[in-house]
Length: 105
Ligand SMILES: [Cu+2]
Image (tube, rainbow, N blue to C red; front, side, top):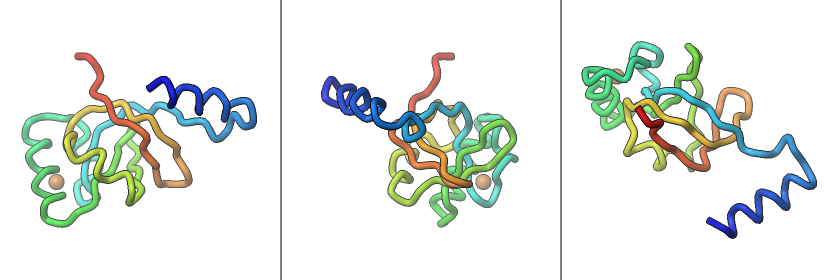
Protein backbone atom coordinates (compact mmCIF):
# COMPACT_ATOMS: atom_id res chain seq x y z
CA UNK A 1 0.00 0.00 0.00
CA UNK A 2 2.82 2.36 0.85
CA UNK A 3 4.51 1.76 -2.45
CA UNK A 4 1.24 2.40 -4.27
CA UNK A 5 0.81 5.74 -2.51
CA UNK A 6 4.29 6.82 -3.54
CA UNK A 7 3.59 6.02 -7.17
CA UNK A 8 0.37 8.03 -7.07
CA UNK A 9 2.11 10.97 -5.47
CA UNK A 10 4.95 10.90 -7.97
CA UNK A 11 2.55 10.61 -10.88
CA UNK A 12 0.48 13.53 -9.64
CA UNK A 13 3.49 15.80 -9.88
CA UNK A 14 3.46 15.30 -13.61
CA UNK A 15 -0.18 15.06 -14.47
CA UNK A 16 -3.33 15.62 -12.52
CA UNK A 17 -5.72 14.47 -15.22
CA UNK A 18 -4.38 10.92 -15.20
CA UNK A 19 -5.23 10.42 -11.55
CA UNK A 20 -7.87 7.91 -10.61
CA UNK A 21 -11.19 9.18 -9.42
CA UNK A 22 -13.88 7.74 -7.24
CA UNK A 23 -17.25 6.75 -8.62
CA UNK A 24 -20.16 5.65 -6.43
CA UNK A 25 -22.53 3.36 -8.21
CA UNK A 26 -23.94 -0.11 -8.56
CA UNK A 27 -22.57 -3.08 -10.44
CA UNK A 28 -25.17 -4.27 -12.92
CA UNK A 29 -25.00 -6.11 -16.20
CA UNK A 30 -25.10 -4.99 -19.81
CA UNK A 31 -28.51 -6.53 -20.43
CA UNK A 32 -30.38 -5.07 -17.45
CA UNK A 33 -28.37 -1.88 -16.96
CA UNK A 34 -30.23 0.68 -14.89
CA UNK A 35 -32.98 -1.75 -13.96
CA UNK A 36 -30.69 -3.12 -11.25
CA UNK A 37 -29.29 0.05 -9.78
CA UNK A 38 -31.30 -0.40 -6.58
CA UNK A 39 -29.00 -3.15 -5.23
CA UNK A 40 -31.96 -5.14 -3.91
CA UNK A 41 -31.63 -8.87 -3.40
CA UNK A 42 -33.68 -9.52 -6.51
CA UNK A 43 -31.42 -7.27 -8.57
CA UNK A 44 -28.32 -8.89 -7.15
CA UNK A 45 -29.55 -12.35 -8.17
CA UNK A 46 -30.42 -11.16 -11.65
CA UNK A 47 -27.08 -9.47 -12.19
CA UNK A 48 -25.25 -12.57 -11.02
CA UNK A 49 -27.39 -14.71 -13.30
CA UNK A 50 -26.93 -12.44 -16.29
CA UNK A 51 -23.17 -12.20 -15.89
CA UNK A 52 -22.88 -15.97 -15.49
CA UNK A 53 -24.95 -16.20 -18.66
CA UNK A 54 -22.32 -14.20 -20.51
CA UNK A 55 -23.42 -10.59 -20.09
CA UNK A 56 -20.71 -8.06 -19.35
CA UNK A 57 -20.77 -6.45 -15.91
CA UNK A 58 -21.34 -2.67 -15.98
CA UNK A 59 -21.21 0.17 -13.50
CA UNK A 60 -24.29 2.35 -13.09
CA UNK A 61 -23.55 5.83 -11.76
CA UNK A 62 -26.33 8.39 -11.37
CA UNK A 63 -28.51 6.75 -13.99
CA UNK A 64 -25.72 6.33 -16.49
CA UNK A 65 -24.35 2.97 -17.55
CA UNK A 66 -20.60 2.63 -17.95
CA UNK A 67 -18.80 -0.31 -19.46
CA UNK A 68 -16.03 -1.93 -17.50
CA UNK A 69 -12.68 -2.42 -19.19
CA UNK A 70 -11.89 -6.05 -19.99
CA UNK A 71 -8.93 -6.24 -17.65
CA UNK A 72 -11.01 -4.77 -14.80
CA UNK A 73 -13.95 -7.15 -14.99
CA UNK A 74 -12.46 -9.68 -12.58
CA UNK A 75 -12.41 -7.00 -9.89
CA UNK A 76 -16.17 -6.60 -9.79
CA UNK A 77 -17.06 -10.30 -9.80
CA UNK A 78 -17.38 -10.34 -6.01
CA UNK A 79 -19.65 -7.30 -6.14
CA UNK A 80 -22.25 -8.17 -8.76
CA UNK A 81 -25.40 -6.24 -7.87
CA UNK A 82 -23.75 -4.42 -4.98
CA UNK A 83 -23.49 -0.72 -4.34
CA UNK A 84 -19.82 0.10 -4.62
CA UNK A 85 -17.29 2.87 -4.62
CA UNK A 86 -14.94 2.37 -7.51
CA UNK A 87 -11.51 3.88 -7.72
CA UNK A 88 -10.71 4.13 -11.37
CA UNK A 89 -10.41 6.06 -14.55
CA UNK A 90 -13.20 6.87 -16.94
CA UNK A 91 -12.43 7.10 -20.63
CA UNK A 92 -15.45 7.79 -22.78
CA UNK A 93 -18.01 5.19 -21.74
CA UNK A 94 -15.55 2.73 -20.29
CA UNK A 95 -14.11 2.64 -16.81
CA UNK A 96 -10.79 1.08 -15.89
CA UNK A 97 -10.92 -0.03 -12.28
CA UNK A 98 -8.12 0.18 -9.78
CA UNK A 99 -10.08 -0.95 -6.77
CA UNK A 100 -13.64 -1.65 -5.68
CA UNK A 101 -14.97 -1.06 -2.20
CA UNK A 102 -18.35 -1.44 -0.64
CA UNK A 103 -19.41 1.76 1.11
CA UNK A 104 -20.22 1.48 4.81
CA UNK A 105 -23.95 1.23 5.20
CU1 LIG B 1 -29.92 -8.99 -14.98
